[in-house]
Image (tube, rainbow, N blue to C red; front, side):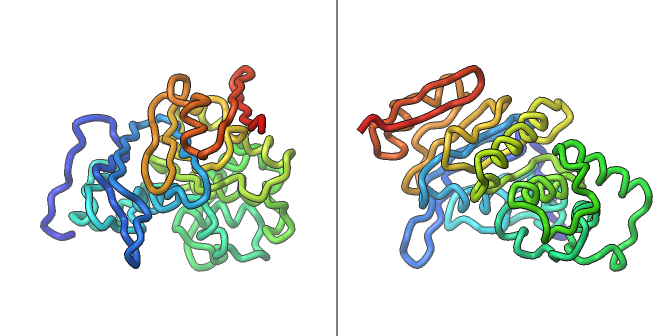
Length: 272
């Protein structure tokens, strides 16, 4: 907003939620949520359906305002800044933007147009050879360079997800938000996306990443923090190695669960 001064972050914080509550039609979608994400951290948001995971991501990305509480994104306080400028610094991939994609466009065009957050063809904006080269690099980064000339409508669900994540990187974002990126994927597609996200996590130049999922099996190697949610509340949060336990998982999903770790991958099951 004109006249407002930017809030300078005293740390490398990219997202901070403090006492965030969201109430819609008398129903609590989030209740007193606290979360802090630092630059280059890789977070998983885990919980059952209706836990508030997507709502929290919408609040963190400034697309949904809280009923009460404080939201800081990239050092700026929500409600005291023009969010349009902030959103250019945030990569977002999820079901909502996916619905806006033109099915007849080649994958490379889908990625290139991410520079202007547009899903129309290139004639509506100017793109130079550098933009195209950078888009090709992002596809390669997601192990999807071979999809560049394929029309989006011909891609599998997993291929589409990788293209959309590549697109979200076009603005050089400081934080990348991935809402249920693996929903609807078969085992092979899921594993290919897990590998791509593990590559992203291993790249020190990558932005902070927040990935929403229902399943511990979908946690990519290299993701180092987790927030577990249920009923709109945070059940536990912190480093994955100390926070993701069988007890915490059981409390989160209200089921007696076992948890196994094999190398840098997880598996959960119920013995009932």
